[in-house]
Image (cartoon, rainbow, N blue to C red):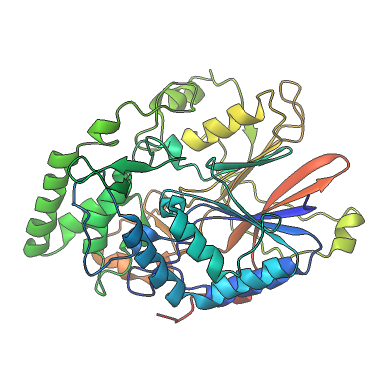
Length: 428
């Protein structure tokens, strides 16, 4: 068992074109080198490592409004483009495992293509064909090791949930061939956002929430832009409807409310906190500038040295599907002490109160993303579409979680990779 686990998520490696938002290849290599200096390190990549959704092929058999996605050959062709664009990253992962460390890969909604056997085999080939001791693919959709629970988190949202995430395939009724299942959001991105994103609008995949960004563009762009994308949006909603897909209404959720959160926020839970009826509170402070954390030496940790993590986004003000799911897991009788999610690109860290219903030392972390992000719901400025091209508005923090196992249990913290590597590189 690894003594220390490092968790990252949502890197979104693409094909090296204008749809590829990952520009931190050198930083990723440096991160692996730093992590690799430890003994028996474990790197957990928690979903959306590879962005198959952002890779366009010259010819594709996928229909715009269908749940039926790529054939295995098409997913394999997308993988080849990603491998070609980021060779150094996969070579670094190969060296990491050859040094005796372990890589755990958890699928997300953007790299569900990894469930194809040939796609997974090709990826392993690129990374040197590691054995099961040094590589693990989470077929279950989550990773559990002792008191640590790691899951991407897309299955808690109706727009990104799959009807059967551990076997995301559908049979084409016309041809009988097996195809990848697409989530509502994957269909939306491939039809709408990917086409909207161009050299002129390179920021589209970096702005959240997506509906706010889309309507901002429709309002402020030229009349031709409004007509084209207004029509596309209306056509998509008429064909597909609100999430999830109409044919996926039987999707089951893990939340105690018995349904999926459609927009990532539950009004009922929010009212519960406003009226003081929430049964659990987690400790946290208002969002602040994240301090820089270098990887500490093992000697310092053994002597009891500790680097404080971040306490961001208190749940009293941002209760959502992931925080609710994390709370349920931490308070369950499954022996879970640390829950780590990704998916929504918002980094935050909360530690439970010292004593809470008899539970102690419980941690919930979202590791955020390594691509630059602008959250329209956080900014106080009244932004217009043309303002979104201003790179100074975007925040790019190379965040990760560290989980340490000791004789007194597990501790977890959210950290940021050193600032000299946290700038945008010019690679493509």
